[in-house]
Amino acid sequence: MTILNFIRKASKLNVFLFFGIAFILMLLSSLIVSFFSSPLGTSNYNVNYLEHFGKIVTVLIVVIWDPVFETILYQTLIIYITRAFVPKIRYNFFISIFISSLAFGISHPYSLSYILAATLYGIILATAYYISLYRKQSAFLIVFLLHSLINLLALLTFLQK
Image (spheres, one colour):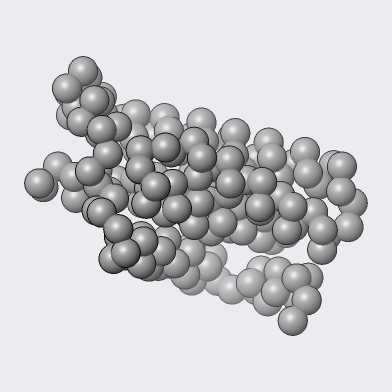
């Protein structure tokens, strides 16, 4: 199947089904990575925020600010710049997904397993962004919501410990 056919088929999915599939893929990638390594919720990132800002500000940062900032930086900018410089969809799709997910993964250096999980998340988020652009939907909103939801679940899991 060519990449354009994949995008066309994915763009025909109901938005809730599309969102659900992306979210489940993110959860599965988290489970797979955590199965082979240490738990992902043990980063000092959450501990530092909680110690310095408290629970409410930590939730605002982790669930709202980080997803907004990272969606703009790692999906919106990288994908738009790549699409501007690489006109063929077959190439700009792979190049933008690769650069976006790698940058996203490297920007989460809490542990090797966390980098790997974040890179997998980055692939899913960038693909969801790209397909949402093709669907002429709010790519930013869909990726922001996916990212916020996965961060909220991770934070809630961390707070339960």
